[in-house]
Amino acid sequence: MKNINPFYYQPLILLSLAISGSAAFSQSIALSAPSEVMGRIIGPITSGQVEDGTQIKAYHLKIDRPMLLNDEKTSCGTQRIKTLPILAENMGQYKNKRVKISASIQCVEVRLGTYAIENVYSVRSAK
Image 1 (cartoon, helix red, strand yellow):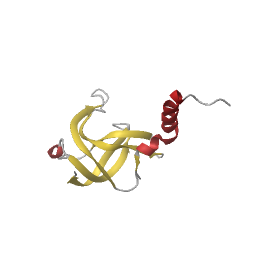
Image 2 (cartoon, one colour):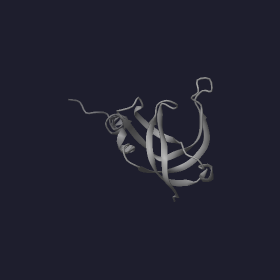
Image 3 (cartoon, helix red, strand yellow):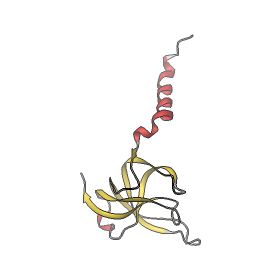
Image 4 (cartoon, helix red, strand yellow):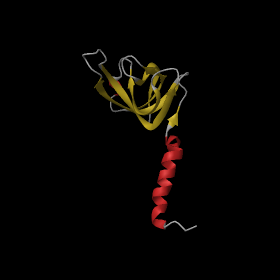
């Protein structure tokens, strides 16, 4: 068997990491219990369409580390999330601030087709 040219080592290593360990760089959480997530509040961001009634304007949490979410009971399925809409009032006061949010994360099938932060229990400043 021939030796592999050292020129190919780095791409092969990166490819094997991408295939086998992409979830290693993501945070995984349980959707059945309240979760704590950290990040920066951005927005408000408008998404969806006015015509079909799916338009929503919400602040989002830009997460420090992407999360891999999978709720097999919903149509959202497995998604790698970098930002989450926050379906709660009074989030504007935290705009551009780094926070730790204790909340439930749910699949919002009807209006978003993706995951969102609901039932915010607490918001604390984070460093």
